Every structure is written in C-alpha cells, then in structure tokens.
Image (tube, rainbow, N blue to C red; front, side):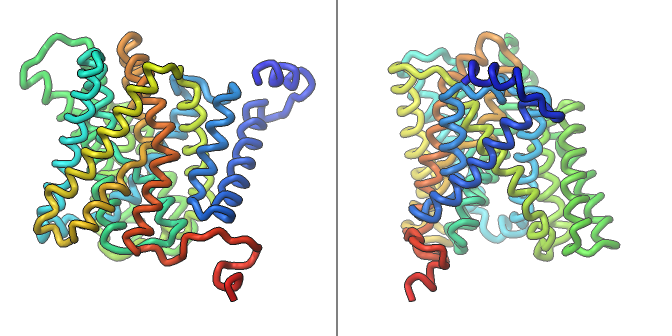
Length: 418
C-alpha cells in the first residue's frame, strides 16, 4: 500500500493533503461496510467499522502513525471524551446510596480482572512491570462499543443499564491508575506517598477541569434550550477545550470528561435532550475513533508467542469480569442470569484501551512497546469479538427491541415480514 500511495501522491495533490483523501475514502468504506453488515447479518455496525480498519491496517495504511501524536491523538481523546461525558451523565450518585452493591460489583470485577491478567502473564514469564501495565489496561471495558451496540439493538433494561454503569466505572479506575502509573514506570520509589501522589494529581486536575465544564454547561442551560443545535455545538466545543486543558496541566482528558458528565447529571438531573441533537457529527467522530483503533492495532507484530499471550489475557479477562459481577450480585437487584449476561456485555475493549497503551508508550521507550505488543492485538480482537459477545448477551437477556435477523430487502424488518 505504501508503494501505491507513493505513486498516487505524484499526480494527486489535493488542497487538504493526501492523508485527508485517504481517511475520507476509508471512512466512506467503513460506513458502507457497517450498514451492509448490520443489514445482512444483524451484527452491530461497529463490527463493520472495525473490520474495514483492520484490513486497512494489515495492508499497511499509512494514515495512522504509531505511537499516536498530534491531530490523531487529539481526535482519539476527543472521541473518547464525548463518549465518557455522555456515559458519566447516565450515572446518578443517589443510585449508589440506595444500591451500594453496584459499587461492590464494580470494584470486585475490576480488581479480579487486574489480578487475573497479571498472574496469567507472570505465569507465562512476562516481566512484572509489563504484566502490571497490561493488567491495568485490561480493567477498562468499552462504553463506546457498548453504547453503539445498545443503539443498534435498541436495547433497554437492567442488564443494559448495569453493563453501561459498570463499564464506565471500570474505565474511571483504569484511567486514573494508568495515568498515574505511566509517569512512574522507571522510578524506584515504592512508598505509599510515591504511589498515591500521582493518583491525587490526576484526580485533582481532572476534577477541576471536569467541574469547570459542568458548571459552564449548567450555566448555559439556564438560557439555552436543551434541544437546540447550538447547545450541542457548545457541548462539543467545551469538551474539546477541556480535553486540551486537562492534558496540558497533567490531568486526564477522558477522565475530566467523565467527571464533568457525572457532575452535570447531579446539577441537571432531568433527561438530557441535547445528546440526540449531536447527530451526524458525533456519529462521524465515533466511527473515526473505531476505525483509527483497528488500523493502529492491526499493525502490531503477530507471532505464535504473542497469540498465546493474547488469548490467555482475553480468556482471563472474560472470566474475571463475569465472576466479579456474579460474585457481588447478591442484593444488587438483578438475578444471577442477568449478572452473567452483564459480565458478558462488558467484554469489549477499544478506544479507551488504545489511549491507555499510548500513554505507556509515550512514557517509556523500553517498557511501552512491550506492553503494546500484548495489548494492541488484544484490543483488536476484543473490539470485534467483544462487540459480537455484547450483542449476543443483550439479545439473550431479552432487552433488545428488535429481533436479531438480517434484513434481506430494503424494507424495515416489520414490513419485510409482512
């Protein structure tokens, strides 16, 4: 593909640059693939996006350099921030007061995931610091993938809501711990202060930035209509500004967005109407995020040893999440069957995990690539397979409002049956 691009660049000189043309065509292919895959198989569109990105990455697509930096890194952070802001807005803190077992479920499944992945890798003779980095990344589920699956299946119910909340909380833990750990990979200090200080800084800066975004939006909602397009534009603009500020001052941009959404939900508890107004802009940003993740992850080095490690990590992570959610299910308000499907719905990994890997690679030229060599193939596998598992879990839980069947005609499913 690099040779084709070199020849093409000799006679094609677009005003916006050749990478813009490449990405435009790639996104067009991804949009078509996602639509056709859902229409003919019933699978969520995100699987089609990921497959197109994977093929492009395997063919040597040059539009996404690794490690991510510059515009590509900002777009990934912005896409993750928008998703996490909306995910944080789904969580009402008073719910935890009435149902504290949900927090226990979240903590238990996250801790079990990190411990299981760490010891599986140590058993396979992986260096302790590398195993620790992969274990922390594995904690994070993917609210981005899960939200797209929910949208495509039109799902609603206790399993859907619980899976989104637990995925968001696991992301909160992973963002905090990885952001703190990435800056101390080569430090020798092992005291309590040395371990807690980076966490406090990350949380403090992210909290301040998130609070400023939440207060600005809350003030805007006093004079602007929640259903206005201008409100949606203001939302994206403030999240973009917060993304840049949080990273500049030593915080975590996605974490600040998550905290901002969480705080705004408490200040403005009424249902959010502006998320429906984001429309095509948010969909394009989300699709770009999925394609970028699969393109980058597909470029990882694959060999028999790495494949074995990746499969072991994926299996350990899946079992840990299912066991963690199920073990703390007593008194949480869901049945054991629902707890099992909730754990299954939390299997996807995607953009957030890639962002965490990027932080490790940027902080260490020696340990970062070793962490990425295991984490990137796992992310690629679980962005595709995880989306399929989450879709299956939602259907088996009986929470989808549409049947899982391909549409063989251009008519809606109900008219095709009639």
